[in-house]
Length: 141
Image (cartoon, rainbow, N blue to C red; front, side, top):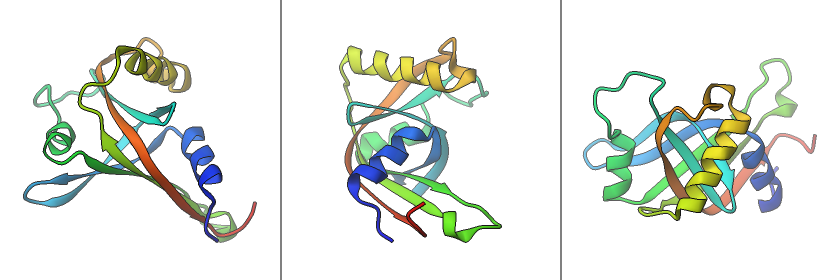
């Protein structure tokens, strides 16, 4: 059953983990698991200092600089009860220079909802505007 936009957006806002797909100039789709927050029609993905990185700028940032389109996919899966399956896809557009207030609000939301980010251990927050949301669920529940 297709989810209406309000239901899909509510599920997107309720979750904190998904797969962000950007476009690599050579490989094409470049999916990466991410933690995220939603605030006022935007998605924020932390670029953190928690995990070791080989360089300070991540490939997803380079991908979005070259092509600002991205997609965030979240899903719920239950092996025993397929009537509870659902997914939501958010089509995104990278915001190269987001307002400081927006970045701060997304950082604050990450700090409130993800225990590992309580002290905001990130270098920056990658910001994308939500262009469209869609989704599907196996049932109404």
